[in-house]
Image (cartoon, rainbow, N blue to C red; front, top):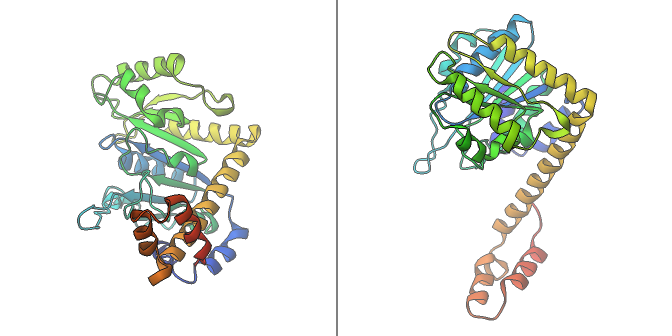
Length: 300
């Protein structure tokens, strides 16, 4: 599994053949996206969630995405440190991935890596994003169920209402509920959902839960809520809709990557630099230049 995910991350030449071999074995895992601002306890919550799932004898895969440095290009990949208690469990596979400059809270290779874990027989795959802001909601397009974590003291309900991720989350969790202000944060969030936010897709009533992941409090209720959402996804047909949309986005991303690689392969008189000089000189407008460039591209 580790070698296959490395192949995906490195975009090796054998990737299309691997994807073809995996395809018939995918589609069984419940993919759960875990997102939230830095410091809300995503890694601790994910670890507690894994413990609860393993108590039910479910196989679990975890993809923990860390941000890459814009200066060195490196990433700490430290989430596994917080999940060290699971490293000797054969029923748990944990992989840290760097964003490598990709925005949206995920790595470019995350969808393909999820397919590897799905085909390997994981019952639940957890995708933990980097700390997201108000526009980094890509995880919602990747997951069957999206969990948004908040913590007391990290903004009131008005601030929460501004966050783009609020509209796409399926389950809300106020973590660190043993701290002062947790109940107020939960009330603010419920008020925002009742008054200012759009209802969940398909009429799903989105719950607001309180947990203390470090103590294990509220995790059983979270597992129950995610199981309830999974049943609703199947009964409503929403799972198929989401997965169709996910597949379409993935196909588009791969096609765009192939075109980009084809553009990079152009050199000399056929290249982007030559067309750019023509645009600067007023000999071409950028739209005609783009058409010429695409006409010369042979997708990689």
